[in-house]
Length: 112
Length: 109
Image (cartoon, rainbow over all chains, first blue to last red; front, side, top):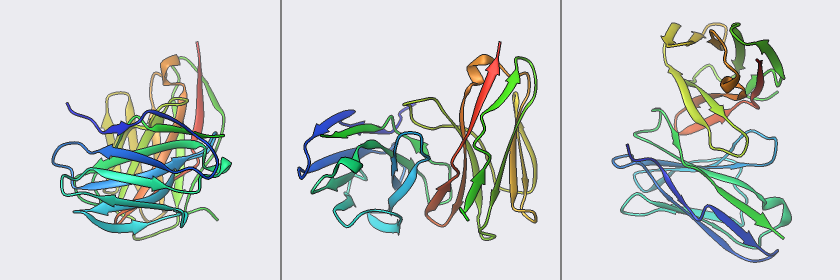
């Protein structure tokens, strides 16, 4: 069965640079979620989209923005990167807001 | 107080024993409850979902939900070394899912 696809899988950036993470949900899933997970921490909810509209917002910094496109894929744009942004970024998708979320493999971001 | 609380562990059980993982949540309006397993550096993998009070069994796993007590648990029977991982409790209300900090489980061979 098709799973959530994230790209790139690994990313190295310098401080103050910009990064774009991409997420392709499971086919026919209309909801996408973004999470940030630091070392030894639980996933922190950043933002979610349902039917291309922002549905909820968590602890997403103002330097980050995201959107969901007409084909339901989503992109997380991160600007003015800081060392503390180094983390695993997971995307998850579901069919509707309360249904089970399935996670992608994650993008490991390292900011030097 | 965190919205979803779990004992961080580590919880250590011998192979073949029952592992019991617990989770409490604060939002009474929560609708959906999930247990995920996460190996180090990997993405969370769904183990169980539960939506109504009572028990739900799937193979060696049983999830229990008590909305009145705002409590959800996961029992793992016949624990195997491959079950050693961090178990995340997740609670959903609307379009937001809150994860607990996770319980680290070690199953000793």
